[in-house]
Length: 223
Length: 237
Image (cartoon, rainbow over all chains, first blue to last red):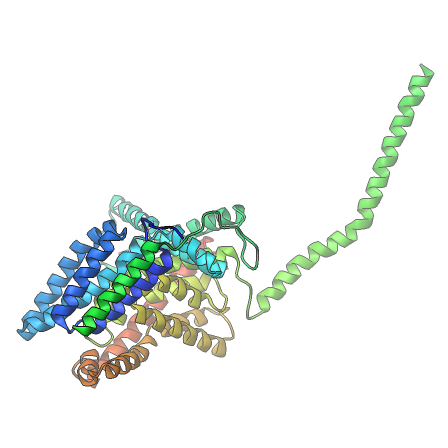
C-alpha cells in the first residue's frame, strides 16, 4: 500500500461525495454546526489533493448561495431559512469537488479493476470526457449561427433549425468516428480478457481522509 | 536449344496444371462460401426481428454522447433541487431530458437504450443529486417496461415518443415518496412534505400537467430532429 497519494482513490472520491451530500442535506437545519462541518470538509479536501476543484467551486457556491440566501431572507424575514439554504448548497458544491478532482481515466481504470462491465465503463468514460468537447461544439454551432445572422436562440424556430439540428448532426458524425476509433484500438464488448497496465491503488492518505470525514460527522452529531 | 525449349514447355505445363488445380479447389469451396455470405445478411435480418439484440460499440458510444448532452444541460439539477417547489426539477429539465433520450432511442432501437443513458448520466449526477440518480434509473426501467408491453420494442417511432414522454414525469411520484419517507424518518414529516408539495394539491396537479406537456413537446422535438437527420442520411436506422 502506498503511503501518500497526491490524488484521492476514485472509489473513495465517489463515496466521499455521496457521504458529504447526504450528511450535509440531513444536517442543514443545524445551522452553525453544519456550517462548521462543511468548512472543515472544505479544508480537508484542500489538504487531500482537491485544491483546484475547491477553488473552482468556491466562487460558484458564494454566488448561488448568496442569491438563494437573499431570496429566502426576503421571503421569510429570518436568517435561519437562508442559512439552511446556504448549508444545502454548501453540501451540494462540496460533494461535487471529489468527483471533479478525479479524472475520467482514473475513474474508469478503477471501475475496471472492480470488474464493472466494459460497456458501462466505456459509456461512463465517454460521457465524462465528452463534456468539454460538447461545450466546444456548442460554441462552434453558435458561432456559425452568428455568421449566418440567424438571430437569437430564444426564438424556438431558430433554436430548432439553426441550433439543435446542426448540433445533433455534428454529434452523430462525431459518434460514428469515435466508435470506429474505439473499435480500431481493439476495444471489444463482452467477456474479453484485458490488461490494466497502471493499477489504481488505495493509499494510507485515502484511509486518513475517510477517517477524518467520519470523525467530523461524529463530532457534528455529538455536539 | 531443344533441351531449353523442353524445360520451358514443362515449366509452362506445370504452371498451367497448378492454375487448373487451384481453380478446381476454389470452385469446390465456392458453394460453401456462397452459403456463408448468404447466411450473414439472413442472420442480421433475423437479429433485427428479435426484441432483445446485442449492443454494438457504436450504440454504446452514441448513447454515451447523448447522456453527456443530458448531463451538460442538466447541470442545474442540484441547484433546482434545492428550491422547495413540487416538480421544479422536472419543469427546468423536462425539455432536455426528453429531447436527447428520444434521439438516442431513435438511433439505437434496442431495449435498454434509455436505461443505459440514465446510467451514464447518473454516474456523474450521483455526485450532485444521488436521489435523482436512483429515481432516473427506476423511471427508465418503468418507461422501458411500458414500451415493451405496448409496442414490443422500439421499431415504431411511437415507442420512442412514448418512452421520451413518460420517462421524466414518472420521477414525480417517486420523489414525493422519497421525501415523505426520508423526512418522516428524520421526524420532520409535515414541514418537509408541505415544502415539497408547495402550498396546495392544486399546484401539484398543475405542475404535473406542465411537466407532462413539456416532456411531450421535448419528445416531439427529438422525434422531428431524428426524422430529419434520417431523411438527410446522417442518421441510419
